[in-house]
Length: 311
Image (cartoon, rainbow, N blue to C red; front, side, top):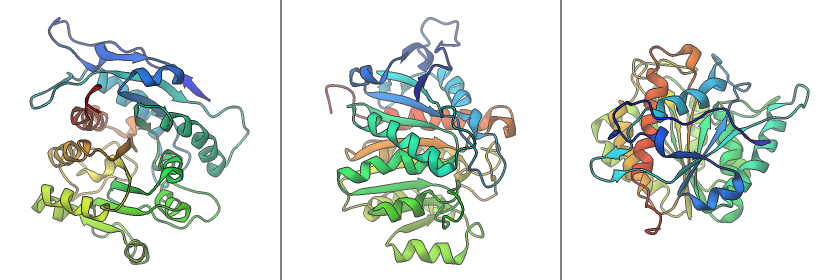
């Protein structure tokens, strides 16, 4: 169910001074995860996408772009101690429902969260956010930061979709929620009201553009009372030219620089319990821009994480 090796990590630079993620990421098993600060888990799945598919190829593309990214951050120094646990596999079940697949993935993410390493999930579509977060609900209060153009709190009808994960999490006991980068005219009034009724906060892309630090402060205020925080980046949160390779690109999104700065601020949170990048669809991408910004999002957040021995 987990550990399918789909990528050989190698640096792409011919300069021996260029340490890249491809030089420092190691392949490992779940039993070895405790030896690392961070573990990567791929989720190559896009059956639940409402719009355009292609996100099943996201984990491979994110790894490729991350492998060629240098490890050095000017303020924090190099990122290190990362293992790749491989991709989740979905077995031989014939025509499984999305709900069935979510349950299978949850059995794996429970094991990942039980390690001492910080988990980074590589999507794949947004429906996997439910099993990625759900195990944390058994261990205290949990809040989610959803960087997204959409709220993803649709009602589950016949089967879950990429638009239902946070409704599912609320119904499973999620304590707090903040959507950062939401777009006007991209959600229904009923769903916006649902989030407000649950006590969640919505911070629009306009508000991020006005003051990204204030946006993070508002986010942390909304999640102030929880024990653990999980951060999700749906790449459609970015303005369409920056991330064309997503299921639903739209104008008016946040900039990559705003996203990176906010992830750095959230990455230093000692309550952070997990991170994901979802909805990277290489077949829809142009010049690898979406995979590149997704890989940089991972690098920026990890650069702010406490290193082994300082946790």
